[in-house]
Length: 359
Image (cartoon, rainbow, N blue to C red):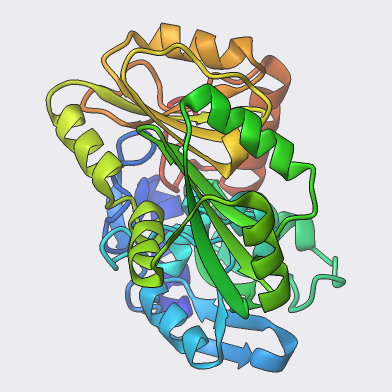
């Protein structure tokens, strides 16, 4: 599949009013509202079109596996600092941007959106559009490309993206502390106000793990200040990798619970929000700003608890998505979503209803 082939097919779809479901390996079909429409695969759009390690950017076609791109970056001791989940190694670059999901280091180093420099897109009129550039200071069309992050493919077919990359840290150490949830949140909030090289945090089942990363001297000084138990590098690496790819013990247990009728929620909250009294297991990341809850509770109760502390809840995995996946929009935000959709995809060709049923 080439860009010319895509343009022709999309023009035919627009004329025929045929909805299209953009897909790679389908690794994130579980996320968002149910996919609908005729499949449009991105897998033939595979390869790196530009990579400048000294300039800290890479341009990649949308169907390229994230795993393959990260293997190339690792050869230059570089990485995607936002640590996107790869879902069994099948996640693609286009799906990574469209889903907008980030891993353990997101709170410290930024999200997919923060690292997106540019994009090439085929819109719902069959036009090939290019936005952004290769450096952060180039803002020509920059905001448009960033809108694509988390859009769930509803604005068009992403064919290529340019992303900022970062060097691997010189030193990494993981510390473990025995804390209940309230004490862990208090500690993370306190440490976030101090000049510590905390790159990632995770609390679950009475244990708080911190990943320190940066210059060797800074990491050693932080270890001496914080205390805790040092986790061997091979065990720590496996833990953070499992958390990133959502294949660790918590997420595997959550999948089993979902198969039995429970729901897995992703709560986005202020980092200073207190411990939430929700029935079920919780895992906390990002210094308290991201909280995973697997529970049989009624959806309204979960959403009310998140809203009460200034956040919102996303139904991440569930057999029944009738309560709605993403948090309901206010009238002004809903109007913005509708205008964006109408501007990019006036005929409603791309991923209809995947973000919100009415879009």
